[in-house]
Image (tube, rainbow, N blue to C red; front, side):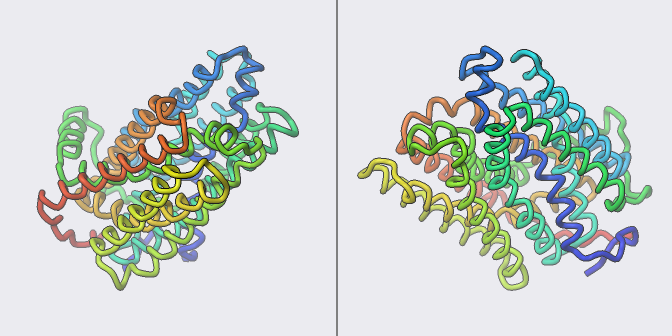
Length: 408
């Protein structure tokens, strides 16, 4: 394994934990306030659909700015972008906590979305800057393993904060989380992109580069597979208040029923991805993961076709689905980034942009799917089928070129 010379002599797990914390800003921003949506609507005199749009108000700016975080980091360095993003996110969270009406909350949620993507976009580029081959997949898996705790912890923490102190305390917590990420990054995050490998920010160069990345059939199909696969789980995240509280009769403090098993599945899948990195090819890992997700989706459909929603059977297949999803993500992500080895920041930006647009569309369309547990299962099956089609398109486009590791 070759390491960039600027990397301190710290354990891989330490760097993975820091990058996972930065990537967790996004899930915490989405999941932590979900149990508070009803109370937010009551306090700010907003109807449920308007409150639901606070999620879209966050995700659309997240998607747009994610296109720029990576390109800016290609030009100015990874560390600077992460520090500015963490600071702006923390300040936007303070604004959310102080919002006096739903329009103010929508505005500051948009500001949160503009800054929250810096960690996840730049973090992926940092991993690929510093590590190569199976080692890159192992470190990416360690990041995913640590990051997997966020979806389980966020709604639990958010639910208890809302019950004990009110919904504004959730955004105070997010502000403290953002400031903590800034402090840790300032102290520990290495600069992984040397000056001689940086790219210009000239408009013409950027436009041609974006066009090249976003019109690459191999890149777009791989990213679409990631997006659609994740969407098959994210529909349950965005519909969690309805799915858990209405369909399953779980109180606001019981969101762990969904996010606990899901996070366990993410942890196990990420661990397996690291374990098989030296033994399995990327193709074998991806095929196995899709077989696991297909089995989980079939179980979800089969149960809800014949039985009413019930614990634990309505949740158990999600554990298996998320395990397969988490197993596939490191291999899919690295395959996509390696298509553009000289512009990994921009490639990571475009990847995040496509994924976030997909999630934002889910947030808009989810009210049409959350009517029953069966309709959610059908939607998941459709999304997974589309992900499989995207992988077939990638396969038909030809195997990716072998990319030699960058050397300084």
